Length: 67
Image (cartoon, rainbow, N blue to C red; front, side):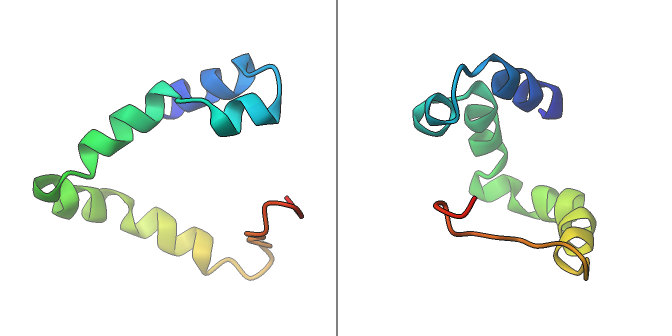
């Protein structure tokens, strides 16, 4: 999934195309988030997400205009 995301981002001519497009990796991600897959996804990603969120020096800007 990571390789697919990297390739989709590299292939996008502009950020706008990336934002309004329908990247393949999103379709794959949706399949993993089905209700029966939630425990698996939570177990697989929880440690990584927690690591990123708890990083003190990381600025997680969510304002799309600022980004």
